[in-house]
Image (cartoon, rainbow, N blue to C red):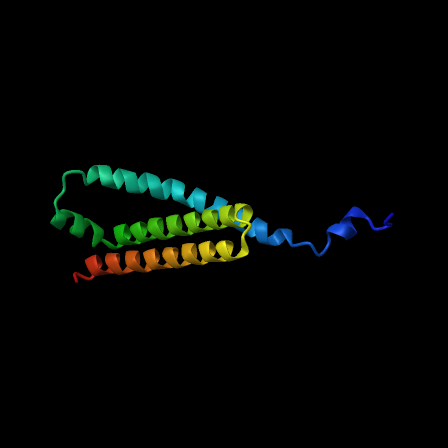
Length: 126
C-alpha cells in the first residue's frame, strides 16, 4: 500500500504545458484561417476567367501578396501542428514517430520557402 497521493504519483510523468501549446496554436491558426480563407475564395471567384497577366498583376499588389503569403503560411503551420499532434498521439513506434515528425516539419518548411519565393518572384517581376 502506498501513502503517496494521486498528484504525487502523476508528477514527473510529463507536462501538460506542451499539449496546451499545440491546442492553443491550433485554435489561433484556425480562427486566423477563417477570414483568410473567405478572402482567398472571394478573390479566386473574382479572378475566374482571368489570364496569366491579370493574375500576375493582381498578385503583384502588396496587400494581395501579403494576404496570400499569410494564408499559405498560416495553413501550413496549422496543418503541420495538427499532423504533429496526430502522430504523437497515435504512432507509438519511436523511430517511425521521429521519422514522420521530421518529414512533416521538413515538408512544411520546404513548402513555405517555395511559397515565399514564388510570390516574391511575381511581385518583383522575375
